[in-house]
Length: 304
Ligand code: ATP
Ligand code: ZN
Image (cartoon, rainbow, N blue to C red; front, side, top):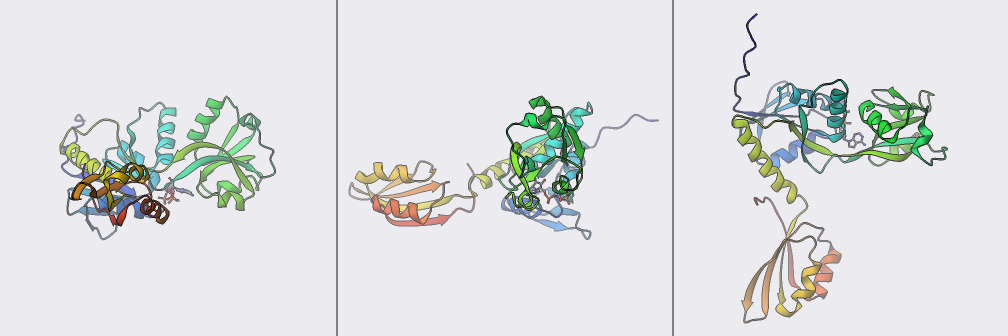
């Protein structure tokens, strides 16, 4: 048999995203906001990048870490919960980690929580000793149990974890929670948080050694700009110089404002990029403190 040949250098970047589900639309919207557009294949599994040599592969979220590990995809957008679970699973089987989180993306927020029946008088994790806990996240749960020094039985279920206590399959569950409504509907209450999760950009542990490295850098720069301004607004207003010390602390998470002199010494025009919420209340506070002609503008793009 001939020796395996090195994979040919690739000149396009391939990103795996969820085909359908909670992360599908926001992932695509975020990449679009970075200036990308695609032509979709007939089977809607592959999208060919038109504006940049960056293609999309539409898959199940659970497949994304493995696709990166196998080099089928270069990057992926997936929940931190899935990424860390599969990382833990691989480490548990003695395999070296081949993917990692590159960026947190600020959507798909949820937490991996331990929940017990509402009737349970919860005092500490030690109560779980010898109990059965149902989960789809056995690696993350086992890591947590080990850290807490608890010997409990992990019951692996692929779905409908929250009904396991009612069916007598488990005494507690470890599952993803966002609003908590599903837990309440099943007479369960969250008692411990094992992991705070959100969608992340995942990539290989080692950097790319071909043109994909430059493409990934370009994507990261644009992503950082898009994430930074996601909730940002540009605030324009006028004020007298003497009220500036009162006004500036009222600007919500603002970068240093640009100050221009309008007439004489006293009247100034200011523009400030605000990353915090510019609520009506905040605008009224600014007006009371001496700001005039307040105007809030959307920010479409930013390149630091
Ligand atoms: P797929 O068909 O791709 O396997 P799925 O059913 O496993 O989809 P979704 O339910 O769409 O996945 O969830 C995708 C991700 O969304 C989760 O892994 C998690 O990171 C995030 N998420 C946010 N809120 C929740 C929630 N309340 N329940 C489950 N996942 C959530
Ligand atoms: Zn899934």
